[in-house]
Image (tube, rainbow, N blue to C red):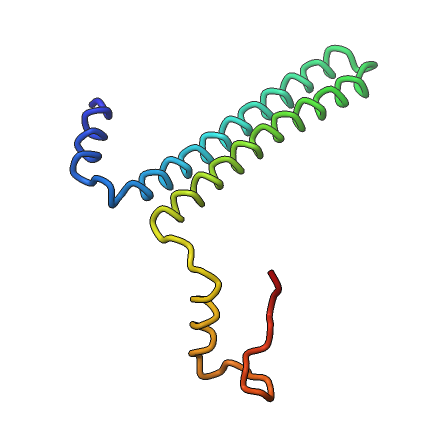
Length: 129
């Protein structure tokens, strides 16, 4: 079964209204692939380090240091990939629901029955711009 015709049919059927959902799904798949790749890479480094230590026990410290440095580099790349997919997911989310202005948020807070008001009847400043 080929997936390309299926994706093309889905894109034609669900057009612009589902564009953000497709981006979020792609971001989730990308984060998953990054995590799987990092796990495989770190596992291979650990296995090779154990093989090296078994062959040359005198070099245990150097092998362990190099393995830790390589594992940190792989983890850094995986973290970068997850951050990029999170940014893409946020961009897709803002495409679906545009950001609300601060005035609209303040109006929504003011309309709440439990909103605390100052003595002059105004809302207290919760944050500054």
